[in-house]
Length: 165
Image 1 (spheres, rainbow, N blue to C red):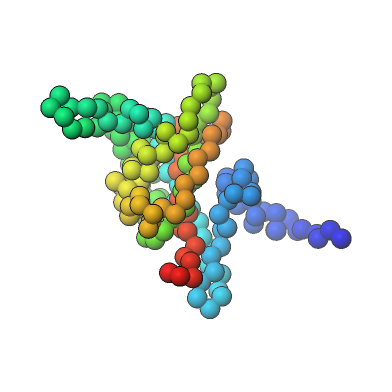
Image 2 (tube, helix red, strand yellow):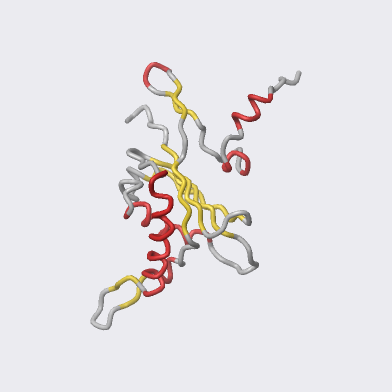
């Protein structure tokens, strides 16, 4: 027997771009708290230019050591400009998070998605959108090639807190 769904059911289950594109992998838009109450949760979303590859973030110094490459510094300047426009609408996440990074996919070049996550996540830490990038804060990272995305879209969801705390 099929279960009927109402228009309200369909619209509430498709409230975000992630739900529309990745229904089986998307975080739940509700988190159960103490006493079983259910609180609605929404993501923090920021738009950034397409990030440089991890391979191009740092350059070697003449006397040893590494420093941010010109390409990385240039990307940060453009990201700062784009962030200023969005800043007032961006909520800072205080606890553990799950991160979805949508990367522009408009050409046929072969690229590894995991080479583009570091700059975006580090930028979120630098702007204090998340408190760090270690496992206490970032519980999962999902990388998605998206022909609908220009540059990079970072969607940060509060992670459910485990029973162990």
